[in-house]
Length: 266
Image (cartoon, rainbow, N blue to C red; front, side):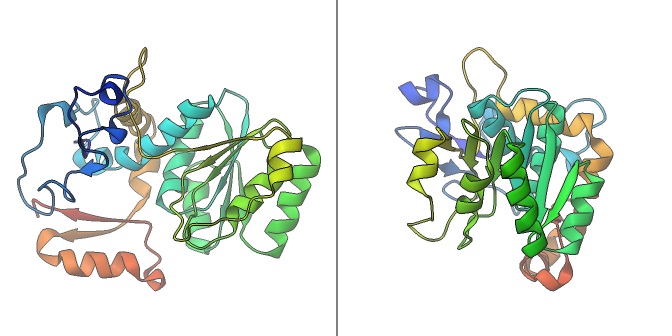
């Protein structure tokens, strides 16, 4: 079930940008509409997608974060053979590895924690770069080599990663901001943007562009293509009665969680 509710009638919905729906922008099931955290829920029929053969509910649940990267890939037209640097190995960054592999890209990713680096390798990243001084030197080397065609920034928060993205991408490369920043200002050198003709765009969740399949449907195909890698992201599982403990586990970095799943049927 795709969690975005929309009117389906406004110009933005008809154009496939339904997260920007004029009547119900950013209307999510479980947030602005009832749904989730229960054994059963009601959802509009248009939010339901059939799972591909062999994709169970546990794997299908991870199509949602994958779809965010499918949207980003679509926005900047990532092509087979291009090199994409993903800044950050959280949920969006890690699931993005699968979407980028399906698109035929070479995938580099930065990781702050050992368990994130291990997860990135299991998912098939071509190179894992530590988020430390040695990693900074590697990013500088990549910039000198003009080796990175696209950067996906997936950290957000209070990090200074947009500056890293702009410094590392090659001239005329593309930078996509996927991370949600907690500050109204981020560090970007305008001369990098201007002199190197860097294309900068934001990407929020997903949509259904004219002339192609919905991003969510494509994401289901991605997890079907990589079922074992997708399942390896799930580090903790809880029955619905233990939902508070599940959230506490996800919030505590000491638990080394990647994806924490709550099973409403357990």
